[in-house]
Structure formats: structure tokens, C-alpha cells
Image (cartoon, rainbow, N blue to C red; front, side):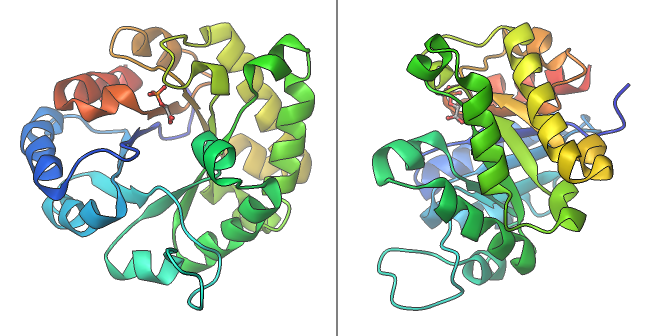
Length: 253
Ligand code: PGA
């Protein structure tokens, strides 16, 4: 048994109004009442953060944002800072999601600046890395993951690496219904763990590394049954309270 606490996170992306988030929690929270031993994180869009924090405060659910800016304040129109997220009771933040990299030009260097800012503000970062389909086909998966992990974690202190959650999310598996095989996911996660371990042996053993990309209630038991995989970052299937509760329970067994 891994000594690491599994973490299962719901990445709602640009989905759910406050009203819809409230309806989700009304159905989801009773379903996880007797589940323990797994960290459960919900990542709503910014406007619903406060409502989700307030409704889940008595539960085991933690709330994370989907992005943040690295500066605490300033002339950055349209951006939100880590202290602002902390003020509304947010616990963590997703950084470097492939959709931010692909559609909003987010670079590894930008992610590297955000990581220490998140940690310093007391936010648990969920750092996303993963290769595209053409990179996998070209045989460069290892090289891509190495560059992402080394650059993205480059400005974070060795002593704090274990506080980060890394999500291995192959881009070709996100929202496509094409899940990585448990073997592919485990292999990439082991590589990422060894890269963190090269920085700090202790952090390499303790850091939680999850899989993301078309996780469903049906494939979660097999993926999350692998000892290398410490949980999941779930997009589409996290929008349904019953599906997400089933994925959370798969992480425990
Ligand atoms: P998906 O998204 O589960 O819909 O593939 C995962 C993610 O983008 O984090």
C-alpha cells in the first residue's frame, strides 16, 4: 500500500453556474458521506468558487481554482491572484493545464513563476504535464515530460516539492474518450516521480502524481488500482455527481 493519500480532483473547466454548482453539491456530498481516506478536490470556474467553498466547508471536499497569476496584485486585466483565491477560502490551484497551454499560450516559464507564488500563498498546486499525440508518435514523450517537469518545478524549493500534486495528462487523452492504458499512465508517472526524486529523494517518494484524461467510473477502478497512480484529475465525468462519486470511491479500493 502506498503511504500517499490519494487525491481525486474535478476539473469543471468552463462549466457550471453558481446554481448548477449548488445542485451538484446537493447531490454529491451525500454520496461521499461515508468515504474517507481520499482527498477530494473540486475546481469550479472563478464565479462559483465562493459558493462551493461555503457549501463544502463542513465536508471533506476542498476547492481549487483552475488558474492564477503569479503576482499578488497589479495591472493584469482579467487575471486573479493567489491571495485573492485564499481570501475566498480556496485550498489549491490547477497550473499549466494543457488547455491553458494550447489556447492561451501559457508557457513552462510562466508555470514556473506561478508555482512558488501558489505555494507561498498557501495554495496546493495541481501541476499538469503531458505530451501531445504527435510527440508520443515521434517517441519524444520522455523528453517532453522531462522538460516540463524540470522547467515547471525549476523555481520551487526542494523542501516544498512534496506539497505539489502533479497530474500526468496526455493531451491526446483529454476529452477524447481515449484513455491511456494503466501501463502507459504508470510508466509516465514513474518517470515523473524519478525526475522529482532526482531533486529530492524524500519529495520523490512523497509527492502525489495522478492521472488525467478521459477518466470515467468504468475505467477508474483499473487505473486507480495501480500502485503508481495516486488518483485522478477528471474533466467530463466530474460534471455528474454520481459519476464523480463513483470515481472517488474507486480511488479508495
Ligand atoms: P477529461 O479532462 O476527463 O474530460 O478528459 C481531463 C482534464 O482536462 O483535466
